[in-house]
Length: 114
Image (cartoon, rainbow, N blue to C red):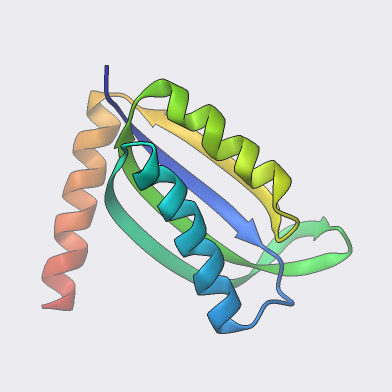
């Protein structure tokens, strides 16, 4: 059974731009390797966090939206935990209303870019 998921992860701010992009590509690669279909990717950039994590007050935020089997999530989160560049992460399963809203938001964003 394929579900739709969203994941947001915060990377340490000491990374350079290429290192940050390489890390995001690594996690995208893990997903596609396990058979996930990536629907949307957003780089939210360097943002100030609500509270310090590991004595850092900012972090690079990355957002991925994808469709995958439930067992893929476990593999992804193990990879997050093993990578020292990841400060925090959260993965959420979208029910049908959230998935419809996410699609509407993507379409709205694309029309703004055009």
